Image (cartoon, rainbow, N blue to C red; front, side):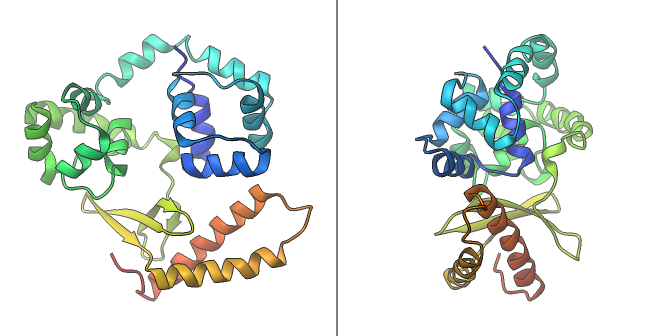
Length: 252
C-alpha cells in the first residue's frame, strides 16, 4: 500500500487543512472532492489518478508524472518507516486497540478538539505530564511506556518542517489555525505544554468577513485566480488576528 506522504507534505507546506484543499480543488478545477477522499489519498488507501492527480500537479506546480514517481518510490523505504514510527505511533495503536476515534480520545483526555491527539500520534507533540495519568487509564497501558515514548519523541519534534506556526506574536507566542470558514475561525497555542483554544466571536468574524468583501472587490480580476484570493484571505486573517491579540480582544 502506498504511503502517499508526498501528498500530505504538499498540503502542509502551504498550511492548508483538508477542507481548505477540497475547497480550492472544487472551485478552481470544478471537481467534487471531499475531506474523506483527501484522507484516503494521503493515508495510501487509494491513489489519486486522472483529473485528481492533474489537480495536484496544477495547483502545486509539479508534474503529475513526478508526483506519481514520488508516491511509488515511497514504498522503497517502507520497512525503515515502519521501524521509525513504531514508537511514535504508540498512542495511535493503543487507541485503535480500544476502538476509540481521535475525537473520543480527545474528549476523554480533556481536549476540546482532536487536533492535539493528531499531533501526538504524528510525533510532532508529546503528552503533557499533567495528562499522562488520563492516557494511561483510558488506553489501558502503563505510565512507563508513555513516559518513554514522550522522551524519545522530544528529539524528533524539531525535525518536523511542518511545525511552523501560522502566526507569531510580538510576545513570541505561536498560534496555529484549526478552523477557517465563513462561520468559524479558531486557533490554538501551547502554554506550559497545555493546549489553549482561541475562537473569534461572531462580531469579530462578521467584521473580518466584511473587510474581506471589500478586498475581494479590489482584486476582482480575471488575472487573479481563486487560489490567489484564498491565499490573500489567509494573509489578511493573520494580520487581523495579530491586531486583535495585541489589543487583547480575542477571548480564550
